Image 1 (tube, rainbow, N blue to C red):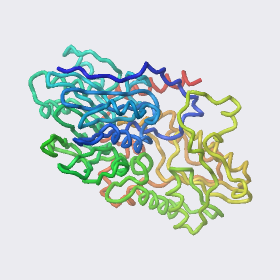
Image 2: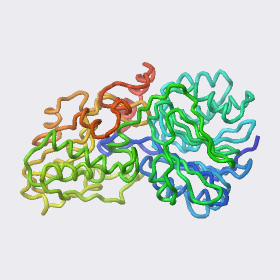
Image 3: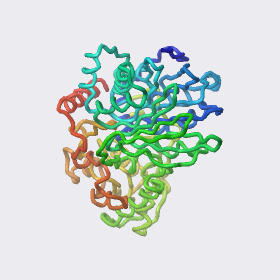
Image 4: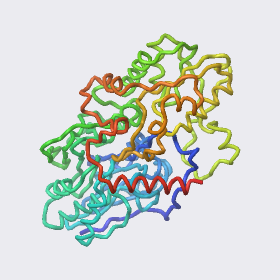
Length: 500
């Protein structure tokens, strides 16, 4: 067993809890994963750029582990990818394969110890695991691993998956057998990139709730790339090959890529919010960019909920494609009425109380000469609590808009996610407790309309049963244990208590 060489800097302080009014009024993505098998390439630097392209999937922490034979080098820390890695750090991460991760925590707190990749030693060497998703049986899995005398260094379900694999390896199985045995113990959403001294694995759960794609780099032999989205391939010049299928494990070694379907009944249930909001608009799903799908959402929204107005605008950036689609279908002019400060990111410096009360102007500012005297349709992709929507509407009225109509390019979010998306508990979801007319009154709009569930699925052009839309319907494709529901409620209450 070879120990890994850590390049980590000093322990970072945990994030302070955000004031609820500052917390993004959106579901928050869990993580981005990236993997690369590319002998004779600078795998650390390529992985850095891959994570840079996936930064939208998590801004809390980032990490890269590289393998050079039996030696493993790892650096991870709190912060954005560009803050965690410097040129000199990447130069020390040598090897021919790499695993990378950028994180937004859903299971486990905001501490450096929970940053990924998770590293575990086994009789066959170290494994490094990067995980996007969430296990719904994490409590039971932790209990089982405890019975097997495993100690835990983190509070994440990702470490549990890594330990489950290590346990099977130490019982005499090879990497593939151990991984497949471990996955049988896991229930929930997981897209994984796993590094070992022999090669890397890419894995999706039997429902394929979180995305994972395969790409290739030119060269001989062919070099393979794994990424949460195709935008991670594009940035390093890799060509998209295909998706990792639900219930599939791809094993990439010096012999090439091998595929293993480790579950007999895969049931595709890609998270529909990946298509509506989470994934970048330039990423490809179902043979088209998500920008094209989001345009159609806006067109469908205009068909379902037209209102006479002078201007259609989107909430930057995620609402813009649907707003353009709404404009095209309705014939109402599209324009920009809000400008986003693209340099506002996560910060440890809290704004003053006056700045909090002034609304959204740290991130969005109005164009008063565009909005004055106009009847405005503002398009966004979702409303979770309504706090940001209310501030946006007030800002538009303060800028002189005579009417403000809000259109949402997804159905009302009425149920929490347990598969790796950080949503509020049900009693904090405004659409779970209020009617559409009441929500309109609370956020201060002249009218409010959501896209229908049927319309959202129809414009995918795919089998509507191949998506998870539990946050809109409460129909969870993987059953949620009652203790998991209770634990989420407890965590949300803690967030509320500590946010002020």
